[in-house]
Image (tube, rainbow, N blue to C red):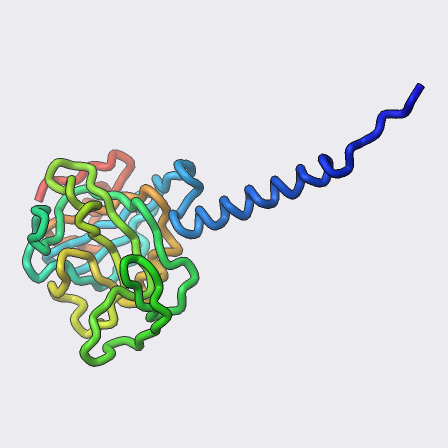
Length: 215
């Protein structure tokens, strides 16, 4: 009886294929905040207050951190070409810039190779990280096509007051920190009203229901 022989080429191809798949998944998670279609972030939620010009990060219903931000200097809205910041519930659709140095300049969501220091004179590109948002409601349905992002800005001296052209701006350090904390599908609630870090209402707004008051 002839002993069963193992085809070593096929045997070695199996772990190689698994390694290749794992590498692809890692790259996918780096750029999108989760494996394609898997691992939606239901724990982290962001509340952006237009009045306060602040963002509160809430994890499992508990406020974790507050960041200084800038929304649009043209006000709130979702009409294409308006340069306004859309209100309501949005979600993180894509994450771009994984491991890029702070201050890395992006054009059309690609790194140019240039790195800017905070408040570089006369410069106002997108820097460091991009969290591309998509709308979930009729009042923000154009957000993704309008390329509404949470992104870094070199004009950090303008943070704390409306200064953007529709996006939500953050300092390079803050947007990199946020990028590492939240994943694909995380909710972003943009509201006109004020939020207070000690307010239980803010926690309820970003709880598991995914609902916030209009406005």
